[in-house]
Length: 282
Ligand SMILES: NC(=O)c1ccc[n+]([C@@H]2O[C@H](COP(=O)([O-])OP(=O)(O)OC[C@H]3O[C@@H](n4cnc5c(N)ncnc54)[C@H](OP(=O)(O)O)[C@@H]3O)[C@@H](O)[C@H]2O)c1
Image (cartoon, rainbow, N blue to C red; front, side, top):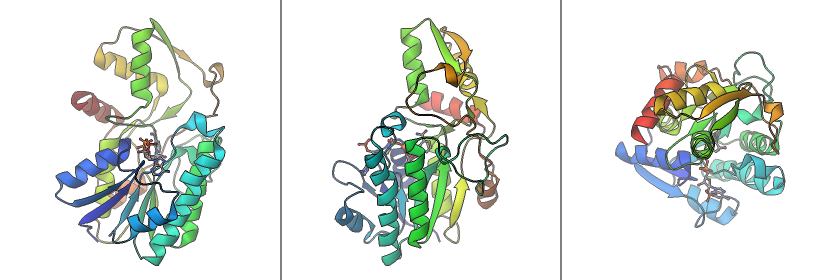
């Protein structure tokens, strides 16, 4: 079913803003809801947002991984229980939901890339809250699909690239982990995928993994970035265990995206091409 109007919750966030822009560019109607006017944990506001919508894309989330460790209740309310209620309301109103989730639902110990049917096992509070959202959405019985993302970056967002370039300006030497491996993914490309999913003949229910093709460690990603931008800061590989961080992180974030690619009939661009495109346009 090709939707002509799309409602985006969290539509002013990093992904939501790119999605809204692409929806408008393609000449479709877009309804955007976000803080401070819209709070996904407020049932009345949620009902009003779902009412009259043709399809909901839920990009709203508590995304501060470190802070979530000490703010578990808030993360669970936004990423978990509110998503469950979204599902219940969407079921009553027969509105399909495309929900965004994360690689952080996995523990990162698998030797290969993760497929959709792999067992989950989040290692931090953010991951547990996102898994709660996946579970409650599925239990609601609404028509839904869940698109899991990893290592996303985009215009206007605060993410690994902005943080590392900021740090490079202030230091002559940077240590970056070489034991966290994943696929850097541009939110513009994710937005295209979401829109393509919403233009398929039937609403694509179930779980999908979405990421750039190929894999890199955080160190390799930074090397690529510094070479592309001519950043002179010395780069030194280190291990996750050497760094102080409040939240534990999965070491392997690699996704197998075959299920999504088969449905869309195209491959995801490589992470290097996505990153070059981002650097050329941002
Ligand atoms: N960034 C990554 O590396 C990554 C990786 C995997 C998956 N994801 C997932 O991708 C999705 C989009 O995240 P993003 O990267 O675009 O992050 P983001 O920029 O933080 O976007 C999240 C949006 O949700 C809003 N929001 C927070 N609490 C809300 C509430 N109670 N009610 C309504 N809106 C609320 C935020 O508003 P404020 O900014 O005002 O708080 C923000 O606009 C999320 O589901 C996230 O879990 C992200």
